[in-house]
Length: 490
Image (cartoon, rainbow, N blue to C red; front, side, top):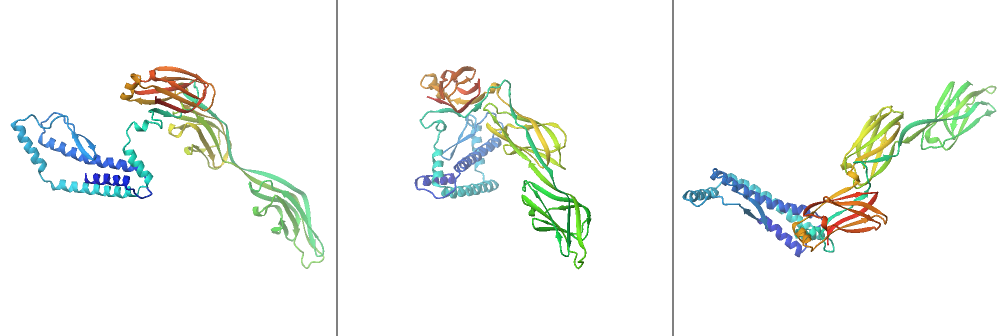
């Protein structure tokens, strides 16, 4: 009790004198205070029950030890006295009871001391924590302590709001499942070659006093997607060393024969490229020379075509709140060594499987917790291969007719005022635009129809409301979008 009084004193000082700090979590502090009060009350209740079991095992009547707190003080409430009617025996039992309670118990004292230490440390932590609270959070804490249950239901104009929701898009459904078709997805990671013919044949030579050089050119359409470029040619005859330059840089200088393939350095390639062919010098042989005859000169460019992931989206109406199923067909054009498909729904992975190169139909279960009202996003990704995902659709469980249902409660006092005509209950709907809005509105088992072209509609539903829990259901007759729904007392 001392600890609770200390905390309440700190709250009072913070309210009137001010505290300093930059931390804030008023709800945590409020719940901790409740825990300390309940702890103190529960210990009192346990001792009373233990004494009753030991001293009065023959007693049959029920005793209620429900505890409550008032300003941090425990107040037990009993349905009837623990002791029987006054008799000589009962008087003696009272004495035994008092003697039992007053007996010292060292083990109990030790346990009580341990509990006291824990409570003291918690209280000390809370005291420091309160001192560090910023003014705005401290004020919010002190104000929330004084809020009543009805205060949280009162709007800015002082009216009691029984229900406030945002239904969103509502679509009429013929069955209890809504079907959303999704566009096909083509994912691939493949190597596609392009071959450029440079020349049918060329001849280069070099002597002591003359030289014959050949230059060829080719284009590269996309350097970013280019994976590899290779020069191919066949040597018909040759002597000395064949020298090849790419854009002025030497890439080959050695004797060559037969079919040759030379990988062109990717960092030396440009959009327009030049290949220069020449031969080495014959040296001191002034009467001879070196020469090469080449044919079928080609450049093969290998491009890596990449489209490994794509997104698709679908929109759920307010009545589509159940589990769903994603279904699709797979068509394989080519597969890699280990092709894997991963699917995310709203950034949460819902499927991860290895793909084989065959056509198949797949289904993925979607839980309601991963779906949300409004726009939902699907992301499909593969690591290699070439696949087409077709006939994709998402089926979601929905309420019958595509409607939505909400619950709201009317207290005894509120219904008494409604029944006496002192208050009325209104339903306020705000649509996204001014158009024709048609739907069925039901409260409990009673229905009314709405057919309006106004953007804001106010309906009197007083006669439909009952004391206790009421169920409000909206069933659209065509697609509508409701941005705000409110039920309040007028």
